[in-house]
Length: 218
Image (cartoon, rainbow, N blue to C red):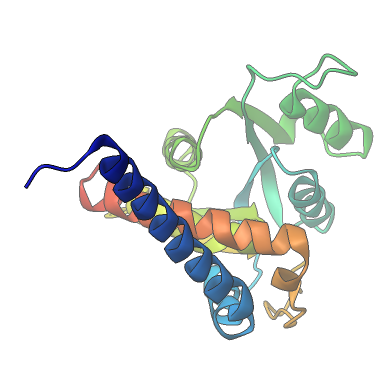
């Protein structure tokens, strides 16, 4: 059967209309049903271990609030050393400094002895984990507390557990704002716009990291 050019054009437009229609239906379903799936998706991302003292606290300086929380833990003598990790290639325009350098300066200004603070260049969670394991091995230490944000904890633990596999090191995971007892309130953090965005981003990154773990690409 031979179609005219107009017929072919019409069929192509019809396919695009259907695709747009299906995409719109899916989008509306996701938005309208978010009260059903979002609580579970958000809660799944949050894990932690009871807050106990460790040899070292590791925190990425990519987030100021989690750095501040790690700093408060140091002030409470929850660790002997503070290991700051961050990307040294990126600088904050107004001050022409990296977040790593800014975090180091702030920690020293607030009374943490310089000989208890260390910095390392890192570009990813897997890089952070490798640094943490190497750091413990080189200094013959045993325990490490990793500080991050609530929404990042599940993926962080997935990566760190794999990198630290078959070792005798003790890993502890603490999220920003966690109480000393290790509990956290169901504060519905995922219902605000930034929280919703974080949930969506983590659920994109989480399966990717999981597949990388299966392929031993750590």
